[in-house]
Length: 159
Image 1 (cartoon, rainbow, N blue to C red):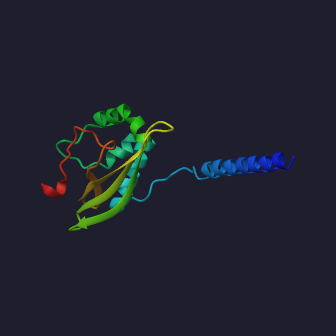
Image 2 (cartoon, rainbow, N blue to C red):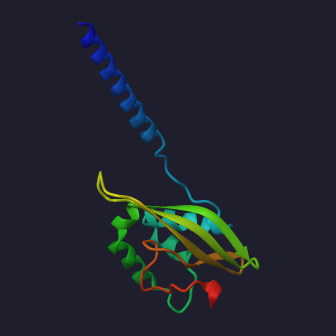
């Protein structure tokens, strides 16, 4: 009888712990909002957020306009084709270096999900490059899956 009571207490504890974890998860799922477009870090965050929200017009506005910049239609089609990989990926900014107040390198960790409950995940250490056009920071190069494979991939700092 005491053993049954002990097992019941353990079961109740596990259920309470699970309910608490689910509650915290649901509570923390608030809507993310855009930040002011004033720093390279905010531009990168807003670009990724716009892609996650499928706000392609806003995401496209963050790109530097140059020879190999895709048209808006090509840009949008790129993310229609690979949206599932975007939903399984996250970005972490680890460092920012600004050169001559008009070029920036952001060191990033791209966290790739496995896509399945027991799928493997991995980290990719990479960088994003931004240039300042007037008073606005624009993305010149970004890692995949947030960037098309056939877009300009040469970092602007080395041209």
